[in-house]
Image 1 (cartoon, rainbow, N blue to C red):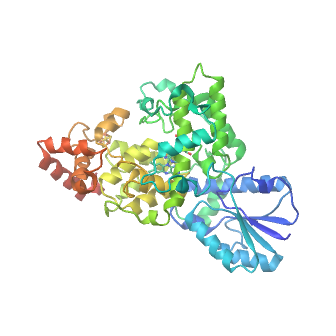
Image 2: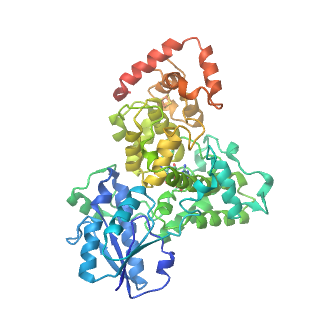
Image 3: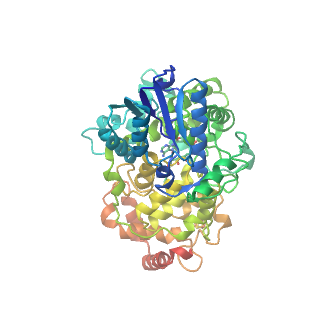
Length: 508
Ligand code: FAD
Ligand code: SF4
């Protein structure tokens, strides 16, 4: 073989043009690396998911006739270091050319560029053929503009890919149904069960244990529930269309102890590893809806499609427009430590106990749990964004930096001062109570603002606004909050209560 082609763990796109023909002069390289298991402490289900998906992918390529080099984590030939391994392979096997697909992470992009500069052979990079836009599309699209409005970008994507469109106009005349997507779930019977067939993963779990890879969270090695192949990813997409889409939008923001997944698709891992593409997900859903318009309203479908061709693609554009500076932004100068109970779920606050507990059990929480429970609390409590990022990057099965950091540091912590969002996502207990049943099972009183048993969100909320007045008051979307605050009679009592909680975050 003359050409060595590298495939990273999140580049499992079997439909890529690389694989359309078998070429005997090409050898593909995949490796499970300590560099990747250790850059942050990951959830065990996340590492297992990546390794198992990589192994399944390598098998599929082999079966199709491609030549593979696959190094398991515990393979004696695995240097755990990409640069060293490449040099060894080049001198041993006499490769004449090195090729790779553009990584989605700034960190890996840099590593690969550095490696290629020093390699003794020529190298080239290729697009991953996954996203709807190139790395720089968003940056160019908003050139000269002060803010990068998601909605503007989203409409461009709808037009560009002709999704839910009627010529140049949005189908039904309305672009966005966000307003219809805010219900709390009142009827348990709407919930559906079961997804893909669970797998046995004890072999990989043992390797991780033997190698001393540090992980967080739980795993049932006999019943692993995540898709690890394109076929399984397509199965959950089909399941989503048939069973969940009809309620997706309506209950997108619901918070409940009844079910951890609600009507969410759980497709993020499949998409982030590129086992399936965002365009095929969206087109499948759109097509399904066209055939079932009598049972599924457009609000459900539009809400789902917006997340993928809107938010997901937008976040990737922001990442490449703003990295590496983005990873150091801390608009509020927050510097508190993340309480230890983020790693155990051991807190009396029921909303956090549920959201964190489920994250540790399943490597999954849905968007509103991430944004309006854990993220909301971290922001109100003034936690350093580095700590918040480390937590999110480790705990979720779908966490890869380009989509984690833009959501966490940007959308959820407003540490970018308003690049991603137009105002901070914060709330008092009121919102959490309205969205579901967390508050009814809580040791704290959601209606109480100060005194024994008062819900911490209530006083921390006003403390956040009060301490950041100079940074937020001029924001036209926030002005009202300060008018309310100024009229409140018990300001000092609330501030004292918040201080007490801030001094005792570990005990909440
Ligand atoms: P669904 O609710 O079924 O949504 C469908 C798809 O839309 C998702 O699979 C996802 O690909 C996309 N999507 C939805 N919201 C977003 C968003 N805000 N940004 C990008 N894509 C979106 N998503 C990740 O993929 N990786 C992360 O590391 C990640 N970290 C997050 C951290 C925070 C603080 C917040 C608030 C959100 C984060 N998200 C992240 C976005 C979102 O919460 C997850 O994509 C979603 O919960 C995944 O579950 P699902 O596939 O069931 O999603
Ligand atoms: Fe969360 Fe407060 Fe409700 Fe308890 S009362 S669940 S802490 S919002």
